[in-house]
Length: 162
Ligand SMILES: Nc1nc2c(c(=O)[nH]1)N[C@H]1C(S)=C(S)[C@@H](COP(=O)(O)O)O[C@H]1N2
Ligand SMILES: [Mo]
Image (cartoon, rainbow, N blue to C red; front, side):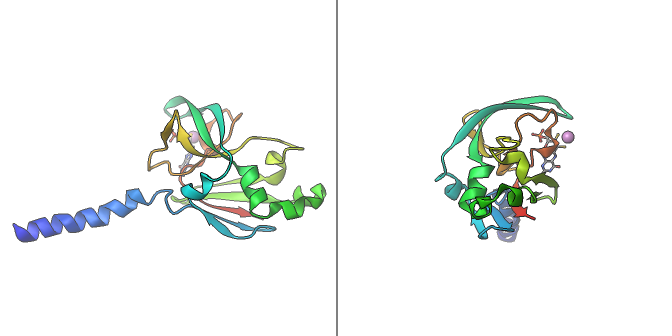
């Protein structure tokens, strides 16, 4: 009995980190023009919040939500991309790769999110419909204007500017 209970406790210890961890470790930001940093949800909370209604098609149908989070552009500016912005021709040479905890990866370009160009309000979302995102979504990229959900990367762990 005692050992069965100990075994159960051991299983719980093993199981908890795998779901509690999702997104909690923050997002590692690095690459060209960037001062490497890891931003946790607590760090993100210090940035001005942006909210927006976004809907996209998934294999389970259309998903609609009111998302709250931080503009990716503000975040990259804060982490040093602004040093590149002396010259927008220089900025527009760069891409960034968003990687999720499950290895899912999507590439974007700086020009897509730069206010003077694509001006797409890509968000690192922390909440939907007034509630924190579920642990299996972690910190989620939300891409307003996309018809499909494929670029709305869940549980983002890193963003690398190339
Ligand atoms: N980390 C991660 N994010 C992901 C995916 C994935 O496989 N892994 N699938 C994408 C695809 S193809 C879609 S359609 C949406 C689905 O969003 P949902 O899980 O909220 O329905 O998530 C996107 N984000
Ligand atoms: Mo999808």
